[in-house]
Length: 189
Picture 1 (cartoon, rainbow, N blue to C red):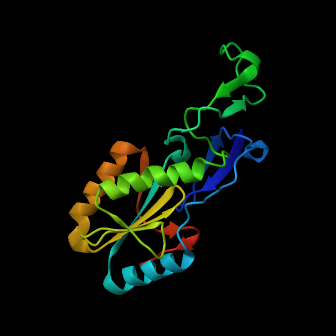
Picture 2: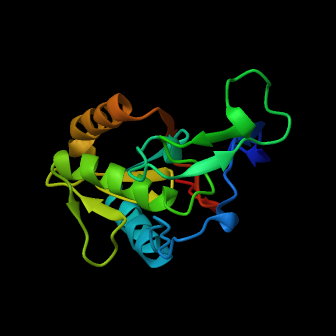
């Protein structure tokens, strides 16, 4: 188990706990991937927001890595110390059906999952940054692992609300509202 203390933009603190697999012990896996938008892309998008007076919303996908199914039937993990007894798990080993934090495939599985959803919503993936998605309504979305920065002009507000609703149908989303902070960068208008 990994425990974290997170600081919210309003100054409050929240505590989080994650069941994390020991990916460093994982064998026979050679490819890793982190779905992280480029800083230069984010800086450019922020300049567009400022120049054109666009809206910028911040979304957090709760437990993003737990959403995709694991395609490989041969991924097992040992339950952590202190796990409750009596779960009928011989030798405290379980087979994973969903990705977990720490699993080397988890970021790639998550990105493939949300990429499929966004493409089905008629977004186009940028060739310059695979974590930037563009929609014909003017909505731009930048992914940073489980955070989504959504930028759009005033006349695309209705479309942006619809996109957020569709994302919420598929994933548990925390809509953090107008972005005050993203990746530690303060946004004050």
